[in-house]
Length: 290
Figure (cartoon, rainbow, N blue to C red):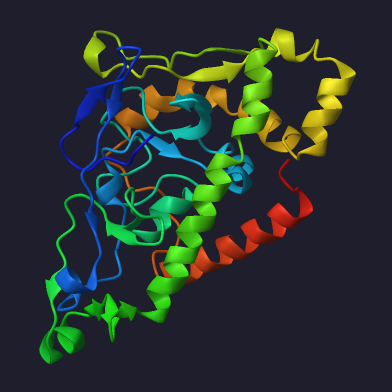
């Protein structure tokens, strides 16, 4: 799976001998975290080394306005990813001061420090490297620590966060059938992100695909209607129009130290996530999956 990565880049090789990210996250459980708490994050420094971010169907059109959206395989499943740099370990959308350099932040990055557990999708996990704080009356008042659990259960806020991330995960899977169809029709072709001159080959992004424009133009009417029926046309067109953003990576890297005037509001991040969740539910009702 495409995974968010924190600090040092850890990779393993898949069956095709390609490097893929590997993450060790920490599952939240009452037996280990009932005495601990977390703080609302400020800024996006935690994502400085996240290069490929999994995307849900509902967010692809908006993400595609600011960054390339490419496709890749996770085992036998197709997935969409926002591409945020030209090499593993780079993210040109996070400024030196932690501000986000774009109009829209991918959904899963908005609920840091939480992720969906890889072992149990009914459970939350903490991002690698995140250190929760010890709960006591003083820390709650002075440091803004919020508990993970109340009476052995996630707090209401974390229950909403879990529901949000579960919906995001389902949305990430919704791209599979349309992309599998395009792959079978021969419309997906490998895509390479423009790399910096002299870039270390071991950090080159691998296994990315795009829709081939010349083949897309020849798509059979019945296949086009099938893609329209399952609600895939909007995000496929968004993908096609997003790849040019990769040409800006070099310039963005040179301006990495400058604060972005397009930084999103950093307050009330959980409310933003809840609003996005509602929008995703609404869109999924309008465009049911096959």
